[in-house]
Every structure is written in structure tokens, then in C-alpha cells.
Amino acid sequence: MIGKSAYLRKLTASSMPMQSVTMEKELDGSSPPSVFIGSWNYPKVYAGPLVTPLHGDTAIMDTPESWISGNKTQEEIIGYRLGLVRGKRMVDAADLGTRFVEQLQEISLSATSVESEVGFCTAPSGTTFSEEHTPFGPSAEIERFETTGGRWHRNLESVFYDTDLPAADAVMDLHKQGVPFSNIQKAFSVGTMGRSKGRHLVPTRWSITACDSTIADRLLTEVKKNSVIDTWRVHEFSSLHNNYAVLLMPTGWQYEWSEAFLRVLGNEELVFSDHEGRKKKTEYSPLGGCYYSCKMAVLEALARQGEQAGAIILREAHKGYVPMGVFNVRENVRNAMNQPATEFEDIQAALAHIGSTFTLPVTRFIEEGELLRTMIRQRQCTLSDFSTQGVMG
Image (tube, rainbow, N blue to C red; front, top):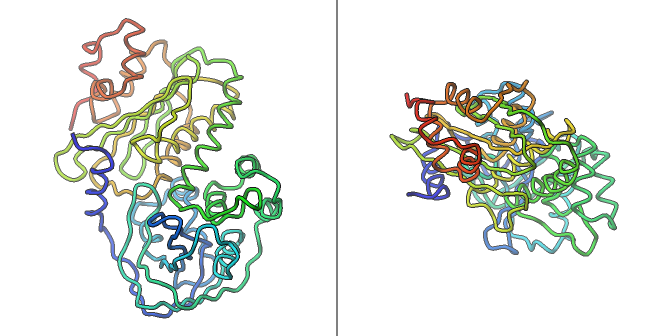
């Protein structure tokens, strides 16, 4: 069977639902604020700002936390992103002393959009879609880059000047202070956190997973001290051609993420799953960054509620779905956890409920999900008990 990464490469190659902004070699506009650090050829990487031809407050173009909660459509979100032009310059990830990198840090620490002027070596072109990071429009190498300094975010400024504070502590402190995840991640990626000698640029894709994992690990320590819930609960949410169901179980923490892609490209019906028990995974999940984004979102809610539970999260993506980055999973699961839970006495009733709202039969998730199969077997259920739940449309 095709692996998830290969499938998503095929899917992103076909994801051209809208055209990006047309650009000349000169751009006068603003950065939301936003930066992007590539991972190819690390530690020599392409880094630079994302700038729109628009002036004024353009924060909405790079604030994923506001999109789903604000009922933005997929077309609106893609429109925001393809309106951002990526400027890039090859830099050494360990060299933070150049004026260009300092400009990127100033952008990432800014509390407001930053007025920018960019001269490109050639007219920017192309678009970039990914399951790992948000899309953006045309790109080109930078020849000249000027910014008008913005006002720094007070909390981000504080960790920037604290060169004795470990990066993981800085990430968690900012999260507890209510700083949006996207702001934390951008500041982390441009080397503004951690002890002075250890600071360096971190590719955007890596920095997203690093921040998700750091926050999740710290939250898990708290959650494991909480009492275990005594019922089976289901939290649900749907948006952007996705359905989500979070099944919370009356067990100690254990976690499984299962996602189905149903007829997105053609007639495919693909299910991918990964899990961990009481101990954290040691190898990187083959399901990519969304595995860690989902985990963080569930633990965030459990910590807030002062509870502990096992968690199995089911997702199905339908025709019309476009890969737009792991924010899609993080924010959808956050929204699911903010919905009132439906409670059940056993796993059969909980899965029957999910099966009545999902397109894919729950048996397919059971077949692919090792933790889900184990939970069913421990409760002396069989696959046939669930064979009528959910019918492909």
C-alpha cells in the first residue's frame, strides 16, 4: 500500500485550486509578520520573509489560530497564503550575526505587521503546498531587503533577552502566557530562544514539530498527575472537508492518531495510523507533524480540564481537501476539544455513535489502529460487533 508521505506528495502536486499573486522584481508591502526557513541542504538553508503587496495590518494572513475559529473558508485561507511572496537567501543556520538574519528575527518578534521593501533577483514565481507547513505564493532570491521596525511582542522580547533560559522552557513559558502557537514557532525558528551559544536557525517544518512536541511533553507530565475519567467520551468537529472524532477513554494516557483520505484524488480509500503507549515514541512518526500537533491539542485540553484519559483520534478527509499544513489538524482538534462531549458507557456505544456520523465504516479504523483493536479486544468485543457502523457514500 502507498505510504502517507508518497500519497501526500501526489496530492500536493495536484493541489492548484487557485493562482498566486503575479509579481515583478520589486515588492513594496508588509509582512504579517512571517518568515520561512527551508530545510533543504541544512545547515546551509534558504531563509527569508513572507511579504504581501498589501500594506497595513495583514496579520490574518499568517495567524492559523484565527482561521477555523473565525469560520474562514478553505478558499479564503488559500487566498491569504498565495498572496504571500517568499523572499529567500542562502544562510548558515548557525550564523545569527548577519544583518539579514537580524531582520528576520525582528520580523518574528514583532507584535504588528512590518512594512517591507524587497528587491528580487528575478520575478518571483510558483506556489508551495505542504501537509507540514502552510502554503505560500511565488518565491525568488532576495537582492535587497529593507524593513521599518515594528513594535516587539513583549513576551517574545523577554525570552529573546534571556540568554540563560533553555529553549524548551521558553516555549512552554510562552504557551502558558497565552502566546499563539504560530508566534512561538516563528520566533523559535529564527533562533531567538535558548542559551546564547546554542541558538541557531531551525527550518520551519522542524520548528513546528519541535514546539508541538515540547509543549505536549510538558503537558503530559501534568496530565499524568490527574485523575482518570470514568466514562467514554467523544468530542467532534468538522471543517475544511475534514471530520474529526476524539475518543477519550477511561484509562491512563495512551494515544493513537488515525486518518483516512477518502476519494480526494480519485477512488482511493486510504487509512494511516500510528500510536504510543504510556511511554513516548522514540522514533519520528511516519504520519509526520500532524501526529504531534494532534497530541498537543488533546493534552492541552486535558491539562486545562484537570483530567487524564487515553485518546484515540479519528480523522477523515474528503474530496476538496487540500494539504495546508499541520495547523489544520491542531486547530480542528482544539475546536473538537472545545465542543461538549457526548458520554457513553462502553466503547461499542462510543464507536457506534462515531460510525453514524463518519462516512468510512469504523471497522476500517479498527483494522488499521493497533491501539483501537487492543481496546476492543480487552473489552471482549469482536470486529463483527462494529461491521454495520458507517457506510461509504
